[in-house]
Length: 267
Length: 231
Image 1 (tube, helix red, strand yellow):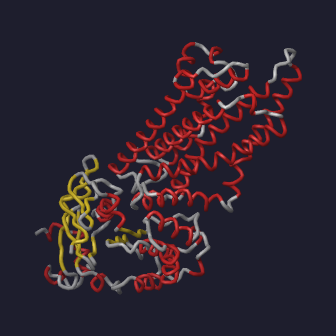
Image 2 (cartoon, helix red, strand yellow; image 1 turned 90 degrees about the vertical axis):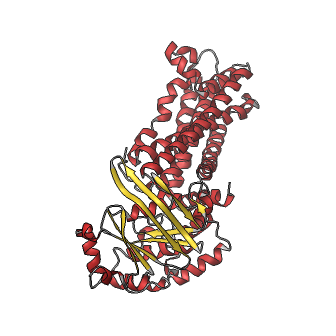
Image 3 (cartoon, chains in turn blue, cyan; image 1 turned 180 degrees about the vertical axis):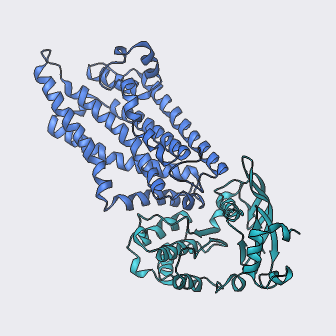
């Protein structure tokens, strides 16, 4: 892998983001609004709860992690969409750039952009709503890492979908986190779901992450086997997404999609 | 020395044969013109040489490197400019050249960018986003990008299309040996028709060999009545 070519992808995104208010603001504004909204909801729930249960680490912590996950996914897809919108595929893929280098560049871009959002959320949640990360313990790092990997996997898979079906397929991509959220158990235990939904939840790493989060907040611990399953699933999804993107790219080269990428694909 | 070796390439889309058993070589320093009517297979051939379109059959070697097995090495020695592939309009001229310079692994990149910006008279636009430049200015940026890695093989697909005559003349004057007309530019031309090489030869002598006065007349015949010229 050539680091210069990976750096080119990251640098391009830096150039685009720097000095562009339409690209800079979404990095932190929406997540900040989410934290404020859920922060006040948790404060209200705390005030009306008779059991003295603290909703902040459960709900606000879950919102923070879920927003981080969606930002990771969107970090990959937004960088990819820049090439879609500027019709840059011919210039990109007629260069020595490899698929591995391209995807690595997208992932590094996502790490940076999602980190910006994460820092804003952490500062806001801690400073305004008193969210203490001590309540999660060191296991939080592992939970965040699993969500990060799954976000990368979904981002790369979403890029493959848009590459295959054309720019208009963007609209398949945006609702993906929303479609997954009922199965992920962000705000409620997976046991709340009907059986068939539990079966789907079991193969989604976020469901294990949020179950673990709730267990820690309740004074228990993350079951290591559960975390292991989540991590293994996330790795499998990353590998599967990279395989899918590579396969779609090869097909695109075979049928002439790269050379003639336009609003309506040659599906 | 052979820079480009195309052997028996063929591209079939479902039942449509876009390029059919095309073979040709290009030697170092040689300028080869690919001519033919719309739909003849010129851009399809160029896209296959650029590695963005997989041939159904045949092989392409760039300076001895097979495009399939040594893609990176082959493409590192190649570059292109095409009217249908402008550089991203949301980056400035300098940002685009830096971006593509990194992709092509250009050494002493800052110096190279300065040289190309001067050569293509882009200094005024260095920090201007390419999307707001005129067609002619964008073409100059594309050509500067195409020269970044000092390519062994340079592919230009209608580099002066959609430009006014003055700008087209300016662009031609910047391309070494690239002068007023195809006859004066190319050492050799290949006429494509219906995906096949119909004629090949020196652009100065080819018309008379086929009973025509000019290359343009020969072009029109290829476009309208290719069968009359079948070997």
